[in-house]
Length: 523
Image 1 (cartoon, rainbow, N blue to C red):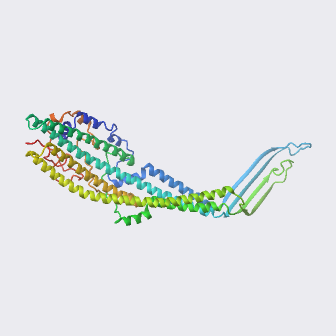
Image 2: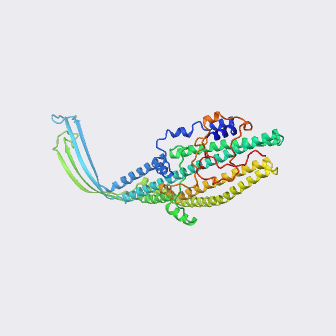
Image 3: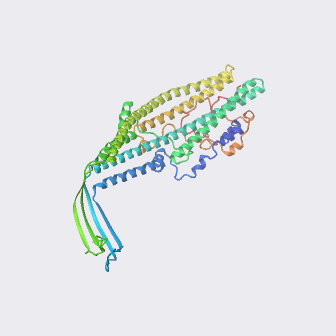
């Protein structure tokens, strides 16, 4: 802890350290306290939690409920309808050119109940149920698509946070090494073994490296907020990347699976089915309609003698029979048929477009996955070769065969090689997740419990989980690394004892990589 604090005090400098701390005025550590749910320790558990609590998924789930209610309403047309009605009136009759002694004021009432069962309606009920079922299944497929998109976004943002943490760690190590080079060059300048140009070059590289630290910190903060927006969990508590379900063995197999299982393609096909049934539903309005009707009416108080005012006897009636409706000229219904046909043709075209889109997404994800795997192989070889070259350049610089520029360039090349390797690992993981999503296989079951991809969840002792210097360390920073105490040996440039992508640092190393001799004071 103390050694790392000395490093930041000596290499970052007060202005740069203050800028790094001010990048995000609302640290994600503070946001984690307001989380509504307990943080998940594994990505599989977090994925299940996100499917339940994510607002975008919840909104689509409510849309499924709406579609289910529409299906129930459509199926209700198969059932008979029963309706009761009644009228109660107080009447006052003024008989002109005559007289009335009994009927001037009276109360009239009528009550009835009717049951109706539709025998035939041009198959509108049948087709209405088919439309509602297809729309319900399409909405459910849309829910699957949104879940897949949210889970892909969750995995991508988590992979970006893990990548940014490693880039920040490598950039910090480079800044430390360049700071040592700057101090060594300043001492050699005092003894006439170096020039002012060498010192200014080292100072320029040090400032550039500081800017790289700030940029990496910014990217880490942005991706942390993005992760929090998707998961509802603080970006400082990103679980390790999980292993994923197996992907198809070939591009052709992936395309076949996608044509059957891709959620948006399924939704487009179901919507097209609903469109076809919609044409038949609209055409049914032009066909005859036959209902069976039965009912009972009760009359009292002169409801049938409105003008004479004479009281008839109370009476009731029971009726039953068939009611036939034959449309002859209904221009609005003809227009509705034309509209339904246009909707059907539109949805059929959308199916063709969805087929092409899904095929393109699968092909792109497959190409990215293959490219990322090849890049990993090349980047691993590049890292190994760059480490050996950096060591050789350092030794040659001791003998005077290499300049300070060569040493600094070697440090940059090593940093770039390591970043390229880590970015390739990230791209390979995201490409596999994208391939599962494109083929309709990315759900909570596809995110397995476990750990993959050498995810780094360790935190530097003097850094927040998103890489920001703590306030106490910023206050201890100094402006010029050339006048600062010499820190511990640089870690950049030496072949590490373990792969730099390993998740945790060795015990007792305080989160720093294995020690290196690159960047020490030249003899």
